[in-house]
Length: 392
Image (cartoon, rainbow, N blue to C red; front, side):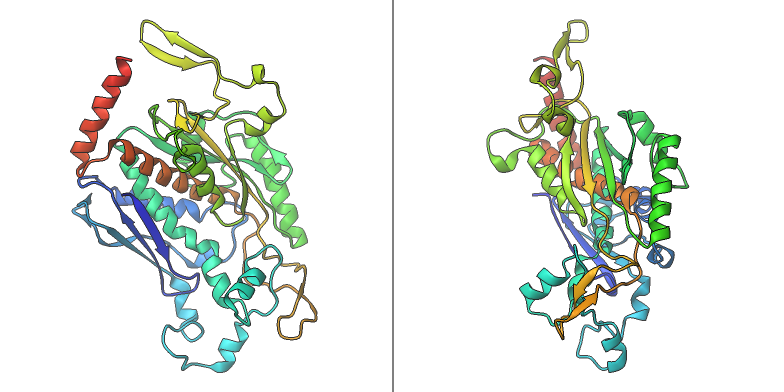
């Protein structure tokens, strides 16, 4: 069974990920894997932490000679900022400066963050441990797992890329093609990762305004998975529907409060005759195709062979330079929320994380249907299925 876990705190020694269930023989291009980590750190509006960390994967198990061996994969990613936190967050009994530790306590929870509900749940008198794990720094591990999942999907011609379709009130007012989205993700400089320069300039102005006023801003990213065969996922149980799995994966991301598959929002406001994708058949190529892709590549919980289109709705992050009203956990008196080094806008980075989550879900679904112990066996199973589809 394909499964993964992550561990680690934002200012801990390292981030950790384990990945189990990939077949043996998958070639892993570490330059591509590390580029995914680099892409996660880019985008206009990122904070000072991105200048400290230069993330790279350190694989300690499960890959030999750049190929998977069928065993669990274990990944470490160094936190370079750890050297500044060794006295504050030691693993063993505290033996450092009490003054330094006290200075890093967080007693004024931030509205919109895990701080207060987490402190109540775990009975903490301050929220440092909560914010350390809840931090989006954790997604570095997910992007590493997603990058390796992408390496598996590449073997079958499946690619997953993202772009930004909205920042604040500014939006891209057309559907981008997969080719456009793939092309912008080959750039070595990332502004807001929008396919349209004019729309991107308008989005940048929104981020500039947030910078100027000490605020933060959210937005919408779109992930497109290209090359997926029909038949991944299932309709038979609620937890086997692929759209449900994708929705959970995207909403599990920090600050994501909603998800859209295909033209869900527009479809909810239209008549059915304007929403359903008409079905056609080419007798020469013996191939079904659709008049549009408003379904986002999934019908009844099953892929239909079109591009999978998933959008994540990202709220503005909770740490503001101009803090909101809160309460001091010691005195229970009114106080302004805590502030630590933070980002202003993270929508392009969220898109990269969204790619990883989609790639993970698709790799799971692919292996459920075609999986073998080796890549060769999986390829043989897949070719057999494609022959079945061709002769349908």
